[in-house]
Length: 592
Ligand code: GCB
Image 1 (cartoon, rainbow, N blue to C red):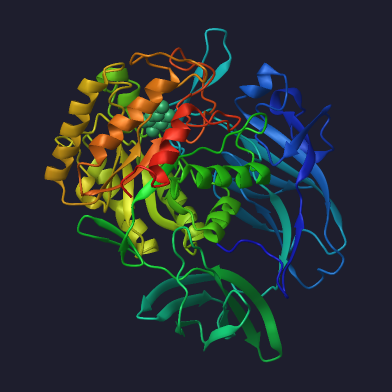
Image 2: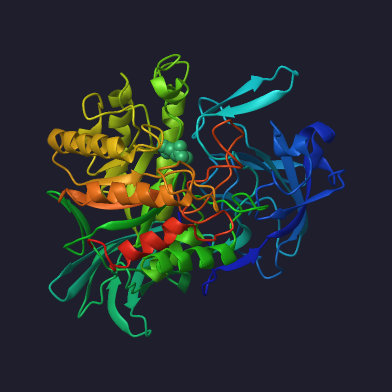
């Protein structure tokens, strides 16, 4: 799915700003049929939950309404007119004046609504977006709505981050020619000093497609004709981790009368491959250093913010991180584009987090009922997961920074039914993108003895918390357990292995000379212990600490003002561990 952009044939109007806002329980029936009768306004993009000092809004179950006036530019008379929501978390119904014009389910992927037959150039209309943050066992991620003791509905969920909802990413009105370039796919390679860019362009039948590839200085280095083809780039400059280089592919579609559509796509030429125990980028072993992150800041919740985008990447650079995982959902496309431009490597994760009833069983890991069952992850959940995978890969397939798909975080891969659930998803992901390796993050209850799906995937990504959830305050025992665990996985599967989560909650400013949990010293020692173990295994291809920064979670006795496993605080101040990581990752005393 192509991102809307300004080209010589396409235009774009940004609809971000402050929209009228209300929740269903305080609005009349069918509130979209008039100006919302509400004193509230909400910022877009931002999650709505933390904007207001209002408990009912923060924890709202049901629909909320955003509304504003929009005017279609006068010049769009013969154009296709589209609305783009970069995300609406988790479901949306969109109305133009009194009429419903589209719906979407899935909170972290974009969708377009074609308004060509509904509005006209120069016309103003009332745009209302009904958005629901509700999660059920048939959504991705899953959740459950319960009725509280006080009779109010209550959203329950099985993942450890606050269920922020609303319009957390940009909204656009955009134009495209009626007959247009629908999609572009590039796959890159290189042979010696020649780069190879294979392209496929989806256009209506009968259009003549021409493409040209320009280098970063704008010099055209290759040209092609036809809906699909292969371009050769002499003396290619590869896209490399830490040294991004982007070409620009200009795609043009012509009919008998001339140019009808044009689309520009940045292209990084690079390869990704798993071979033996290595994760290869451009044929060279790559070792991931970095974090699992979250889209999470004060007040905005998951609202995309360009200042935080820039600052977070500055901190990644400062600490020596070369990568991150988009735990536990696809991030705003601006984040991926920034990584493309700055040479940061991404493991792109779906929003399939919480497919695990074992977590409800607590430390016993015993599910109250099977995860893969009619009651929980059933056929509809599976269909939602498939659809989400299509939308994620459709959006991100052309980004050079994305080197691997993580198709779930901590699923119950130890339970019966896991294989039946994941095998078709893996097949689908490989059909949608035959070029990138696949992984999933393995929960601690799924051991090298009982996991049922690891052979379907390319890279083993472990989430392990020895020294925190297991053996807290006893790093000597934790070290033995971690070592044994990794050895077991290496014996079980002949694949590259990495740590996709390891971390310890840390209250900044808390100190001790002992192995005392929650102190800054403990977090530093905990990470050092993990690194000692990782460095024993040549099969290891990476370490991503949980988490980049502290983040908001649901209330719970095990969370003090949110999850504090951040190496940076929620306001992005370094804890002591950040300095220690910097020493290791900047190569000052580390292995890579
Ligand atoms: C995990 C989850 C992550 C949690 C983390 C924790 O295994 O994947 O979402 O936040 O543990 O801190 O408990």
